Length: 166
Image (cartoon, rainbow, N blue to C red; front, side, top):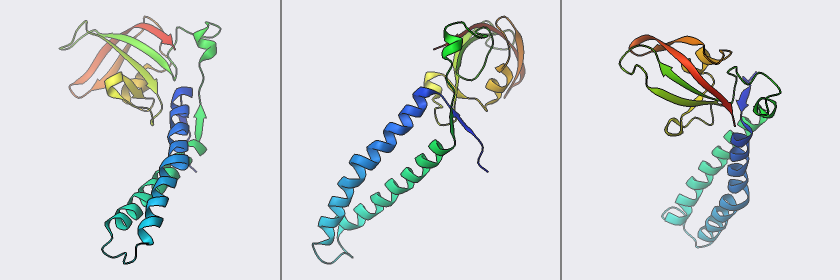
């Protein structure tokens, strides 16, 4: 059985949009090109046909992958935490956490990360997977807590400065 694929509502929407783009626009366009190229005769040296078939296989592979990710997707909506109805001072999936290193080279450096699904990871935006070591260390911690995390240089202590749900 496949492991659950936790995902934010925005991430779920992005995957659905990509899937619809592939199904409704990209794939039909490539099928037209392949059909046209096949009607030109000899397919063995027909670049449009060969490339089109290759591109069609890539699109179909991506469609299967996205369908599988959506099939096991569990959308986690933090609306109640945003409005303060639930524990908004505790770190859960979807939280944007600002923390500060208490020791090491980057002492006092503030870092902000958002805990998202594995399909949404973007380190440039500060999006880390919920299965990453930093996220696992932060989950269930509260505002003001000090947490030990494993880094390549060894264990480091960090302090949680802010928790937001967007």
